[in-house]
Amino acid sequence: MGSLAVQSHFSSLIEAPYDEAFVVMQSVAADPTPDKVNLGLGVYRDDDAQPWTLPSVKKAQAQIQDNHDYLPVAGLPTFIEAARKLLLGDVLEAVKSRLTTVQTIAGSGAIHMGALFLDKAVRPENVWISDPSWASHEQIWENASPKTQRRFYPYFNHKTKSLDLEGMVRTLRRDAQPGDIIILQACAHNPTGCDPAQKEWNIIADICEELGIIPFMDIAYQGFASGDDHHDAWAVRHFVGRGTMEVLVAQSFSKSFGLYGHRVGALHILAHDSAAVPAIKSNLLQFIGSEYLTPSAWGARIVSTILNDPELTKEWRQDLRKMNARVKSMRAFLFVELTKRGTPGSWRHIIDQIGMFSYTGLTASQVKTMREKHHIYLLSTGRASISGLNSKNVFRVAEAIDQVVRGDAGV
Image 1 (cartoon, one colour):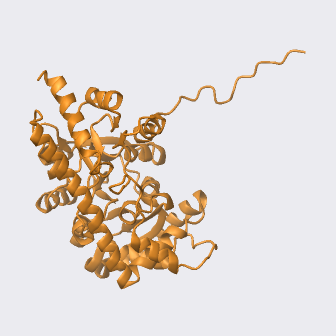
Image 2 (cartoon, helix red, strand yellow):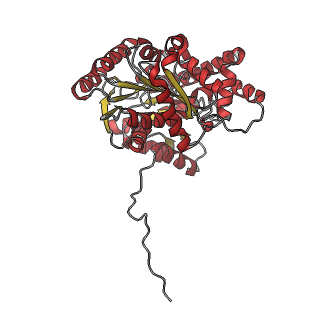
Image 3 (cartoon, helix red, strand yellow):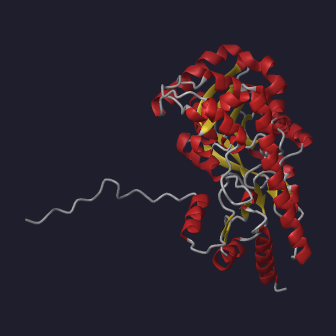
């Protein structure tokens, strides 16, 4: 008796695009070349191309007692308070009564929770995302708030390799509406490594106030960007400290504590008045309870232990400066090597940019050659993770860039 052909209920489903960073990671893993170079994934590596566990994290782990109970739905209370203090510093006391904070599944989870909340509470017409931006910003909003239009504001001038503030302001004045959301990366912009100066942040804050746009700030690199966690939080503290805007902040601890796999984050929502806090918190708890019930405990306990111990906090800041110094030195090495070779074009932007990434200016075809001929992997946009460079491979990377640029220039 023959079997009947049954069509799958899922046959009309279209295959979703994959995150290029993870596709690149798979390509690196499949490449047998011994001296391949991975500049694709945004994780810190030491000079031996190995993951680095922060000494402050090791000490914190040794202090934590085994405890496998659920956390409260909102998260670990000592972590939440420490996250607030780290983010807002001296600004916290003035806004505490109007601030709601919950622990999240890292920064991406904070953005997701924020999008769910705004979809329900505000029903924004548009969410404005920088062009270019971290790919997940658009994907998260597409899934969490499908009726909200995803719009893009100019951020990076490819000719000058600098911030396009004029284009950003012009676009928002022309097209943004009151109640729209704008995603702003507070420091170490991904993928460009190009951050607004403080006077430019002032202008951006003025525009948000003037147009009635709600800022949703994403701070994934506090302390990692400049080596100074206070400096890196300046934009967030400025927006919150103005006292004239309702602000959301997605805070990640993946990069600054090296806790990539532990998924530690927080979402902060600042309302105009404290009367809104109970409704904000109850809705966030409902979202959390329906999705994952409670957040992960171990990473939050590590962060809480460090930030609530003055000596560990001091050591953590030393760890940050060490990571920052190595990344800066690799930027400088690459710039010097390209300059020595007389590589066509200007490469000053490599040392002007900040944080983990450099928007190199390499084209997609040049990146393809880098991968296939030189076994050096970066994203097709030209984004390179500078922490993937080290004293053993930076010269080869510079030579490869020089060759592909000269090849395209016919030099």
